Length: 182
Image (tube, rainbow, N blue to C red; front, side, top):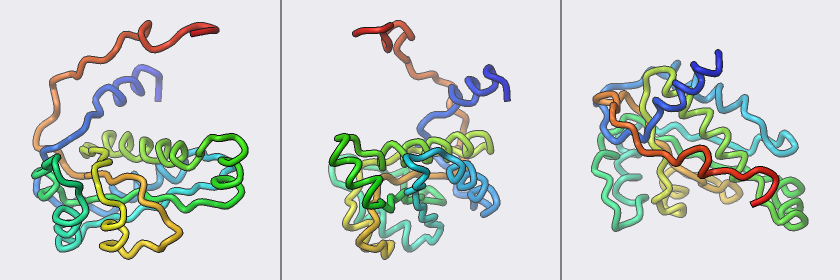
């Protein structure tokens, strides 16, 4: 893939909140998971764990019990797949290293793997949306997630009802970086 193709893919990806009520073949989800699996991570610990929720009853429970109040997400009830992105942390890399360096590597690793997932989804014609407005304890209970696993984010996944043609305004390149010093 050339740089211009990569930038086109990145710029076409947006947070999708309108989905067709159409099943997604497991093969496409597995392609997204494969892209995530190949992500780099601190000390190559690969802390990401994904739970693919296609079951309508479980998705309904997530929508009813696992979303924080105050920010309605009626579109989430129609999405055919919800992905729970979780972290399985290692003592040395994610606990001891965090204590010494004051850097928590786990969310960085999860963010990279998750972004690989959503870019792969975009390349396959699927829409996605990162969801951070959730009750972690409820999600853990609903999905039977072990105590040593942390829910970091949810993703919605499905076929978009229409392709987003409106571009979001982005900061200029000169507004986001400095050379050598602030």
